[in-house]
Image (cartoon, rainbow, N blue to C red; front, side):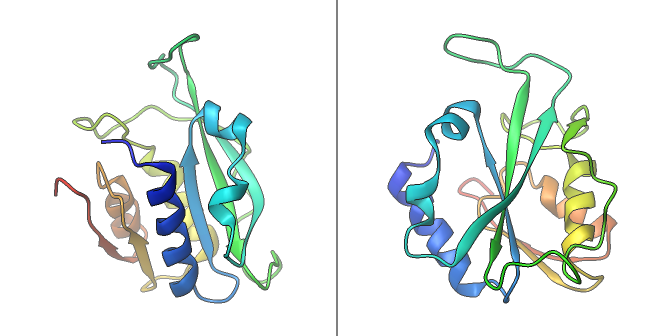
Length: 156
């Protein structure tokens, strides 16, 4: 089930409340939301957009007009916003081509990219939280990089 705009905003405000200072939120959006903007979701938060990663799925997905081949991960950071000393990996390209290895969920995300992003902003043993886990690809990425995963989904 797709979340409403109101529910997405509430999720983001809740995440903002528990993030550590300078903590990150990786928010996956489709092309429509990328073009429309997500500013209203960030109202009443201390989150700012600091980067964007494009995922080339190397396959065609659905779409009302064009067939979608890409998805977008907006990188948000809680204040104080800084990169030095917080973002430790500098080898993540802004366009990543990765095929899905975990099937069985409509909106599965790339485990390799998610692992790279987690490693860039967290340390082994840190907690990674995914309140809308879906395919639980973040769980796989967190475990493979020595992070502790907390997550849930409506169906699991």
